[in-house]
Length: 186
Image (cartoon, rainbow, N blue to C red; front, top):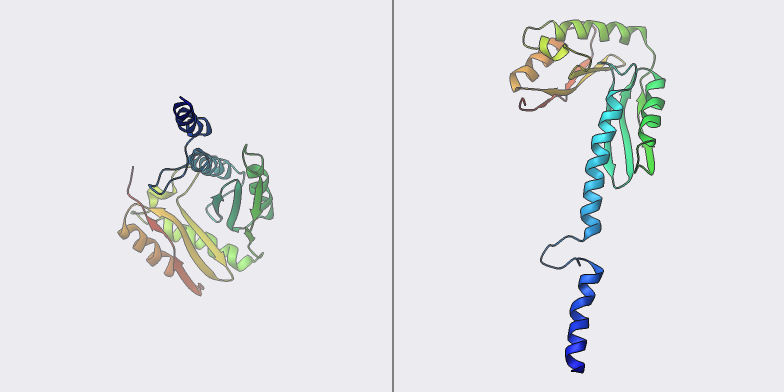
């Protein structure tokens, strides 16, 4: 009888404590919750960043979520966008720390001219015109000291190449880096 009670107690304890991480690959409840929290935070951070006033095609805001910590990266023309990004993210429920590594691009009339010229060259292309429709253009044009970087996403490798060719066709540009990603349309 004593053996049966001990056996029953031994079987009941793991059920009371919850799942245990075993060698078979089962996740503990806290690991599942952490992944769910990260997915929630990733969605909320993106939502907050795209709503920042003055965030434009000439800025790029990127982020990573690691647990309850959000790291902001990217490059912006206006310093207020950097502070607005941090302020909007740190108020999200579940965010405990914000590491703001966003770079504010140097003020330069020459770079401002190049930004406008690049915008005209890229978004006037028949293949690329659709990426400029709406409030959030999907091709971001980052200009720093005469060097252009294309960031964002397009639907095909052809669109990616057309954007790079158009960007390279602008005079007074020292170099063009094409970081556009090809993503299938939804």
